[in-house]
Length: 112
Image 1: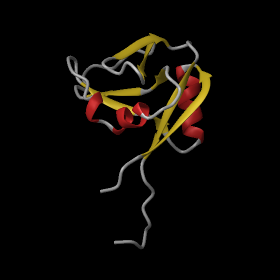
Image 2: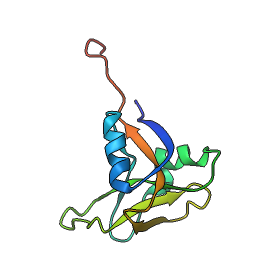
Image 3: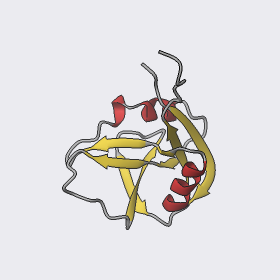
Image 4: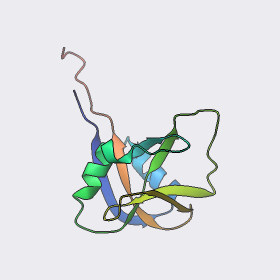
């Protein structure tokens, strides 16, 4: 089973600029799937990557809701803290933070 690739950018940007930066690398902000009451953050690769980060701090991520009937508003955007990862937090989207980009592995077209 292939796992996704992650890149931690320490350059501080807004959430939208971080998402655009990740897209420029053919990736997206690292994603955590949540529902209204529960975040599956601990079982994600994002958690494992940030746990190893040398610089402590907050990092922009993205979230996907399991319940698609609720569309999140982007007045406040999600981030996590690598040294206090018990919760996912939200703050103003214009705040400047480093980010974590996530990219699906590239598959060789002729490889079976």
